[in-house]
Image 1 (cartoon, protein in one colour):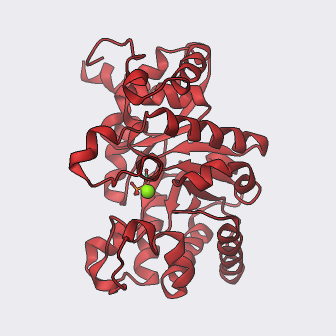
Image 2 (tube, helix red, strand yellow):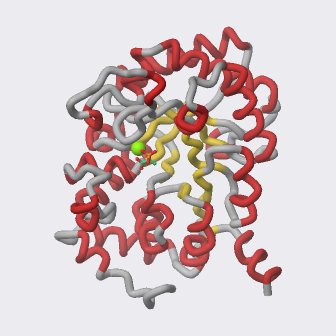
Length: 328
Ligand code: PEP
Ligand code: MG
């Protein structure tokens, strides 16, 4: 019984008509990798590096960070790893950095905005990442979606930000003598989704952060428990932004992942696949349910379902399209 379940978890998320969705786990440290792989992850689609800063109570130096990134690469043994650079600000406040207090931290200096203002935080992190690439990514490793290491920038809102971040990455990569590493961006504000075709020219892939994309689209603080029932990532406005993101990416041959919470919801995962998302990354415990549900579906049906969902008037109407028996 246990063995049969393990075999089931290990099967790819391939639809009945032969379309494969890549499946990753959201994992922040090497110790969590074996569990994620056991649950059926094919790689790590989101490593949130701000946890290195939050857990330690001090800023980890370059060597300290290198050890963690190298540990992740070793634990994954060549499977894909997407490392997100520091996403501090908003709901992720790091007391020991003593950053200026803001009236509206969610609309303030967070993510890429902080990275660009604080080379003392960004550059050691990038050096640690490129050193890990140099030491642990073989020259003949796959490129693109299957690359053993990719770097991703959080909270992007403008193309010039991406151009500047790319320049810093390229300078540090050359200094370190590392191989090229795919560079992607998080799509988590409406501006980035609407302009996805422009962003796609300047980066290698997208990962949609539906937690923040929902917050910024619906103007609902993601931490406000009173409004939590209304903060539904399956709101048609959010789905239409995801559709725009996939269309913009497709125009330039870029792949699109989703690493926000809705990727771990089996019905949500079906809609995302139908909208054209290539990869889903989630909490390890959500992996088996999502993979099983996708394997029972046909991509043609998911596309029709996604089109129907985008045409609904509200999130409740989208949820009503889910005809799976409760708990399935
Ligand atoms: C998101 O916003 O959906 C996301 C994955 O990033 P985080 O939850 O870390 O903000
Ligand atoms: Mg986010």
